[in-house]
Length: 128
Image: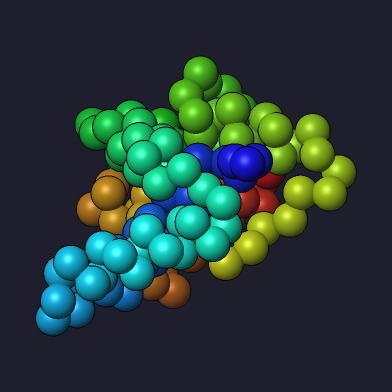
């Protein structure tokens, strides 16, 4: 069953792709990724499609655009995720969600660092 938000899954895809980027046998790397999705009962095709939707949405967007989305002021998947998180008393920030945020930053050509940490804080602390 797939009950995770696309941003969490974007982080999962990003993390696995980065981890196995230089794996010498590409077919085995792909099998490792597929096995991980299967282990978590996730539909890899759907997960990758959702991750692609997030990536496509980000094209041409600014940090301010994405900040507005995290404040629930939009109609994208990011805004839907933010609204759902705000409405869920048990929602909790976790590692793969963080990887999703880092992936978004990199897609916006922002190098994650101590100097750019306030951007992530605006998204998570102020937005969610």
